[in-house]
Amino acid sequence: MPTYILDGVELDHPSGCWKLAPGTRRRPLPGVRSVELTLPGRAGEVPIMGLDHETTQFALEFKITSRTPSGGDGGFEQLEANLEALSALLGVRHRLMTLEYVAGTLTRVAQVTVTATSEPDLKIGALRARLTAVVRVPGVYWRDEIESTWTGSANTADQPVTTLAGSTAPVTDALIRYTGPAVTPTLVDVATGDTISRASGLLASERLIIDCAAMRASKVTTDTWDINAGTDVTGSIIATGPGSAFRWLNLTPAMAVGDPHSRAVLLTTSATSTTGASKVEVRARRAYL
Image (tube, rainbow, N blue to C red; front, side, top):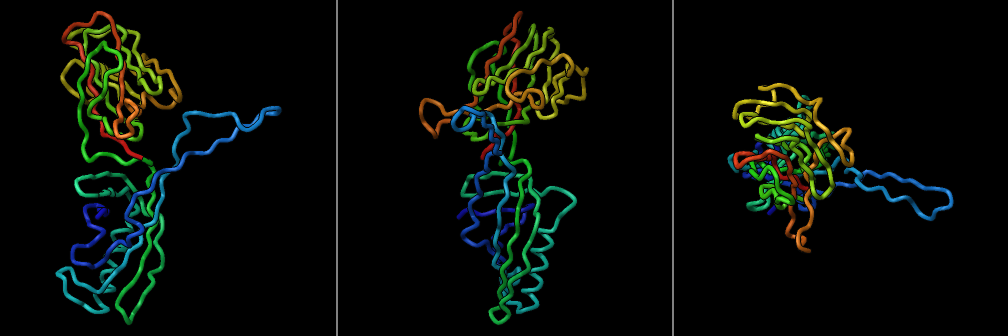
């Protein structure tokens, strides 16, 4: 049965101190940010592509009991203690919390905040209570638990980034490392046409690290992923494509071979003066709607 885990605590308590209501067990899909553009003399609206998703928000309804953590019945005092424990778990305000959605072997993770909780609906005679919490996912997308690293060719079209296969949402925070020798290293997200390049060369001992989320780039001379370990070259990066002024190379999945279960992220890389040692690597976690 699908469930959630918040900051490592099961929201379907193993001893039954609290349980999720069945109707709140499926994470919702995000909506699309609405933009309308009409022109005089033209029917309907002007279609606008590339609209971003809205922040995801949903409710979790809890059923709280008087059961103790060991599985016994603690009466009204335990019901109150369970309410306090759950309220404290939901009441973190100084940081984002980690919410895991778990369904069998499938796990999706998001950073969330609880924006509101209802007044507990108390049934004193039955020693039961109901509580609803409103959860907000500022970053919209759910992610894999851990990141993975893909290695590809420095000069090949339409390469599938196999570690991102199955994603349903764009990966907006990838770390990319281009290993020389290479002149004018360029990367293109095939689905959107987003492009980043550097009109300069890399020696065999040099690597170009690109942080797509921070829109930063660095040239390093050691085998590292630390963008702060080298020389800042952000000013020499050229980004083109939709939204490139405020984001770099969203790696976007597209349906492959007409099969909605087969979703691939394709990346085209190019450079001159490359050798067999030249390569590109992508370190990221898959993203989901």
